[in-house]
Image (cartoon, rainbow, N blue to C red):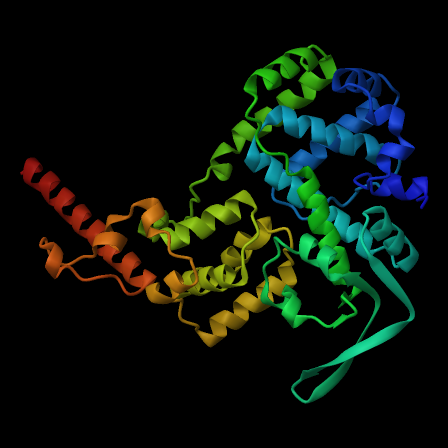
Length: 397
């Protein structure tokens, strides 16, 4: 099928980009960069690219003045080149998340089933369209019956492929209605799957062929505009470097560094959030309940999820406030092990692996709850501080 060029300009990640812009897409990166920045719109391109990186570094969810014109194609192609050149997984994750969220917002504003259908067709998805919408069930909430209807169904194989990294319970095939191998899916959930496709398109892994990367950088760095942009990106990165380290730093009311008090299960989830990885449902529940149990501020818990590809601030705030009101207890260690969320062995954590309370291994008590880990660590830290201060006092005497 033929897809309109105007649709490619707005969504350049579509496979038909190569057909509509074959000559441009087939050029070598150095030639493409030289040509594109020599055009009248070169300065506008620089601004758009830097805006994307700045927004990603600031963990924003959208760009207010984002434009979906023909320049969008150049921006997308350049973005791939710069991500390869930077060779930094944290930056790549942030950019991929931001760009996919922008795509989600643009698609939800479409309000055009024909365009959404054409996009799915271009992606090679087996999809069916129904007009008028087809009823496929009833949703019952507190005795209120709501008819479920949609214009789309998607073949279960394509559904599973696109949803493979979205491990929420409600996305499992067993929890969705099917007909003749096709899954009933509402527009927003279909768009969410497309968002995940876009995110994965930009997730360029750090290259193992460092020699080729070095040669590439040597070639393109001779281009003044490329050098100027990448230097600005790297300067912005250097200024914010601490925010992007794998060890997630949390300041709770400036009292103490809580990271040292957290068990491996919590550190691992915080690491994932910092990298912008998707969290499964149980990971999200556990980290919310754990932090709230420590009386962590609701707004800070919400901010923690802002790196997630599917982040919705209003919805997340409601859910965190609801959890706080209910005073849910975090999973105990036994439950975490059953859910494959225990990382004591990975982190080689002595307290988790060996227990506490006695020098004799046979008499040591095993941890039963991650909150106990934090309390023990806090107690030990206070004792160390006490003896340290005591030694100082004795020296001063």
